[in-house]
Length: 194
Image 1 (cartoon, rainbow, N blue to C red):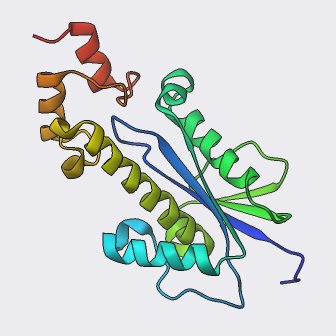
Image 2 (cartoon, rainbow, N blue to C red; image 1 turned 60 degrees about the vertical axis):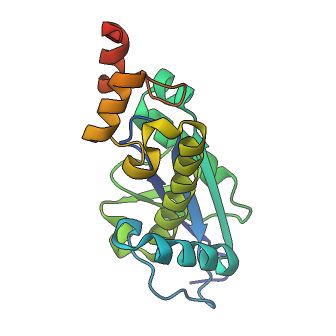
Image 3 (spheres, rainbow, N blue to C red; image 1 turned 90 degrees about the vertical axis):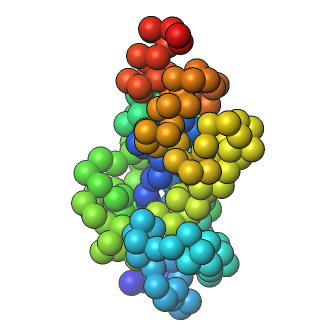
């Protein structure tokens, strides 16, 4: 790889939950400073993810984290909001990128060559690194939701549509952090709470 070739790995976290922003990260790894143990963030313990996230921030040539808001998710739809978060993450990278490798089968709209790789977070180190930064950022945002809305149990369900979360939604109604375009939240709003 020539020293002028910079390849960013890109991944997202938080597409499925009923609440909170969707996050994306872009990472350009430094071949001179390899990071041991990079893999799909879902296959790592929370403690290991945090350790690796710190290494990624310290040892990468470039990295960035971006998000799309609940309002953007509800107005655009979750796929388009995810693409927007990915686009923002890539555009914040401060080195001239040659190629962007994106986890999955869709790439954001960019003026840079893009390659989509299904299960890229398991096969491409830079995508795995991006998945770790996106996931740890989303996890931190979920804990902020828990602090803001302690009765909802965000520390337990992380915003996903678990039985506990749905029960709290029925009892307490949606917060401003809930995605009203997602069916379980929308249905509650349409019916009104008992």
